[in-house]
Length: 149
Image 1 (cartoon, rainbow, N blue to C red):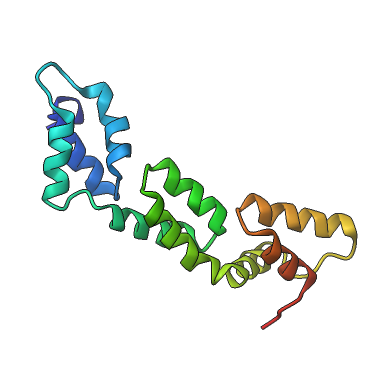
Image 2 (cartoon, helix red, strand yellow):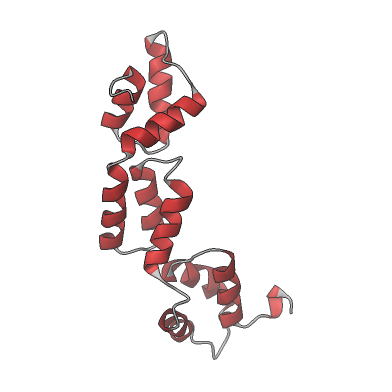
């Protein structure tokens, strides 16, 4: 059966088979496919009741896929964009903040490998880490070489 002829529930299941999706993401992706007689909220309620849509799994998925390369700030943004609850986001971000310096150092080492010789080089390294969503305190520690293992 082609994707174009799938029912709304079939489309939702196909999306969920590829990766975890939040209810808000599924609503956004499926709304344009709603036809007369379709009840998208009911379908999503049913999928949620059966455990196909699970906010905690979405949080874990985002953290597992993104935390290695991104700071807590960027991971928070991604989870907010997925429409996850503030409590779930706060809990996940709190855990990520504990390892922020180590993760920032790993990303920095992979990209640069050694401290910059001049202020412009340090600024470039700091901007790079900031663009990845790492906290300013973690960035300063990593770029200045403080708190080395």
